[in-house]
Image 1 (cartoon, rainbow, N blue to C red):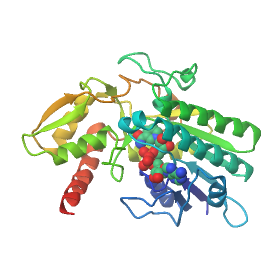
Image 2 (cartoon, helix red, strand yellow):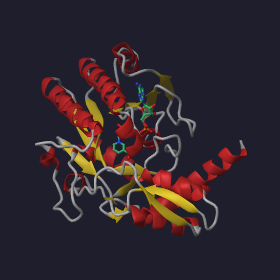
Image 3 (tube, protein in one colour):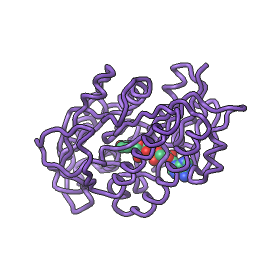
Image 4 (cartoon, rainbow, N blue to C red):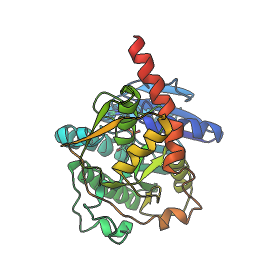
Length: 320
Ligand code: NAD
């Protein structure tokens, strides 16, 4: 039986990844600084560890007298645009420590295959319709935020270790990801979850505030597609970073309209000043397509699977 360590398993994407690896027949250990807030982990074993500490990384990586066949590193101090702009120091301090110690200890302890979760935040701000950027065009670099700089450095560190040690490294640059069991409130939520929550909370005919003017362009990747991309990339021969994202570009206004359609509610939108992030990012998915991956969920199909879960969380929170 293959063994996998999933770092950040108390979080959104890694929580889903654990489930996928279990379905693929793996023995899985999840680690995180906290338990999952919204679900019982599917992992065979779950450890609460602080991966900023090298000794905790070593403990996470130790399996009997050896280590794991595969390590998936998704732990990060992380959130949506509001968090990314207000917690620059925490992101640069905490996430870099996690990656420095996980990458180093995984290589030293003989992990044969290591996955690192980067982000399309490594790319610069773009205009809608600009030509798609390939992975190599992230350098010379000009990320819009410090989160992107941390990701870029950690990518390069993982690649340096793969040159020095017999450790195969796979790196995905995730596009915005959403789905059930993700952060939906508290300040770290991303746009799809925040919009779903606001719509679930608003009274019929009421008004929801949304940051920006609605014209920023995004692509939103449903979590099952993201996890499928991670799995395919990890087992591919693709060296270097690979973008993973739904090629359906939508404006923030179109996202709000999609949530409105799924909810069946009528409401008004007040566009307010806020940390919107970049105007657009257009990037190529050709590398991940070479693994046979395709996004299977349109934004509408993904929101149909996400909104009911967030609506249920909102109702449950009201009853508390
Ligand atoms: P998440 O916040 O739900 O999960 C990250 C997990 O890391 C959390 O459970 C958190 O507790 C854990 N963590 C933080 N500090 C830790 C520490 N010191 N020790 C152990 N665990 C710690 O975020 P997510 O959306 O599931 O993101 C997973 C990965 O994907 C992250 O690396 C993130 O940067 C990347 N990513 C996500 C998106 C997205 O849209 N969600 C987009 C691009 C990249």
